[in-house]
Length: 438
Image (tube, rainbow, N blue to C red; front, side, top):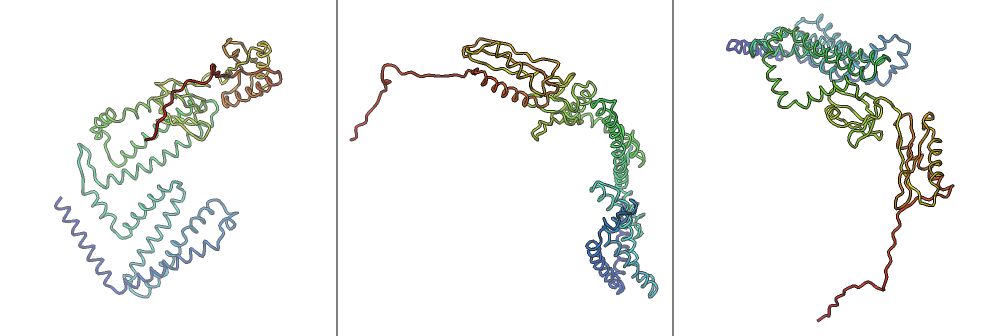
């Protein structure tokens, strides 16, 4: 370790002497001034290009790859103009003076060109964070390579290590593993999205089987990507066995709910008790299942709200699935009339009113029966079938309004509570106290 520290200090001192010698030269300030001038001109040129060039009209008939290249070049116009101006300055100074006097211009030109190439390559990515991360990482590697410090930096990052069992962890190993994992996960996401689109387009599979297949493919591809990425950087997976006990303790202490929800989600997908599109009632919440995730399901209430119900609750609690085996739903309406009405006429009107609704199932006629002779009047029950439970409350409201209109036409009255208070024998006895002022 002492030797590594000594080498590092020598590297820092050598770099400092080199930078000091470069800064003390008058040619450094000339090159720096040319770089600043090129940056200013490039910024002005980009503003002029974006204001005057209509890319949509200009590239309308161009091939798609050429249109894409043109858009990237216009969006990176300042970098392109800067690189071109610095290259011209470098060529002029190279032939007019010694090559070493335009070294800074050469470095700036290479860095600008590297950034331009990186922008063109990363333009195919859609995730803004990934684009930024890849761009900065690639540019730093290019900068170290241009400055001739890439090998030295790699050796320095590999010189410090932490040994855990049979695993030697170094900053270089962590960076390599992280980069490969990002690439592997990105490719895995592309592959799983492609597989999901193909599975969802298959009409032979039920929605629950489609979700189950997608989850299995995602988990399998993720596991394969991690194994390949760790193996590519030289990490022996058997050396990670020391962490399995810690993971087991973590699951036992703090991850029971996460694991329970994950296993419950697999069970729900396998037994098909609920599936996307089902109308369910869980507790006091009713809505359609819009999505089934690894940890929860999303139930859309129809009024803009979505309930995120943990998978474990669907396995352990009572769930009403209105569309489990059949979407046909029985609608029940309770109502009453006074004793002046003819109960046979009332049941006939109720059945005809329900049958007239457009959503009532024609093959199953409505049924209306007298259920009770109550104190306030007669009580009836009306039942009829609809083909889908969606909007059942609206159907009930429509039938009840139509039934009200039918009762009005026939002179049938709906009972309501009436309370009368009679005072007999004069005024109520009230005790009063009169205070006499002093």
